[in-house]
Structure formats: C-alpha cells, structure tokens
Length: 117
Picture (cartoon, rainbow, N blue to C red):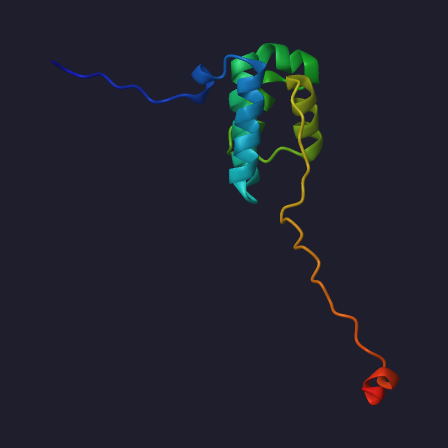
C-alpha cells in the first residue's frame, strides 16, 4: 500500500475568526524581527478568508496581495495596515520585557544621626 502525503497548509486550520487571530498572535510572538514571516501569516489568513474579497476591501489587486503576502515580497506598512483592517484582526502592543520590580532601598541616616550613635 502506498501512503500519499501532501504538504501541510495552515489555511485548512483557519476556520474561525478566533483561529485567525490566535494564529497571528502566535506568529507575532515567534517572529522576532522577521517581517516576511508576519506577511506570510497574513497571507495565510487572507487566503482562508478569500483573497478576492480582501482585494475589494483594501483596493489592492489580488496579484499584488499574493506577492506582498507571500513571505517573498516586501509590503509597505500601509499595505499591512490595510490588510489587517480588512481582515478584521488587530495588532497588539505590549512591553517586550516585563519591568523589574523596583529595588527597595534603605534610608541612609544623616551624618548628624550617625555621629550621635
């Protein structure tokens, strides 16, 4: 018996708005400074929602969207914002590093108090 395999496609897993938002959120956590990775993830979400409708909603041609969101293109930030808005997802900002708790300092005694002791 021959086992047939096919390439895994994230689009097949993106069935709900929540799936799409969680996928983008996870990608943003893992991407570091890899903008092409985020563009590719947005492309996956766009394909799951329908590239034709996204083209209408953004005013950007389908071919241009495929190229920009392929992971190979270099979309402008304006394009990314249009796509994110049209997809109905939000980008979130949070501190990258949790601020350390302030160190507790002891009050230094004035010299006059030290001399009296």
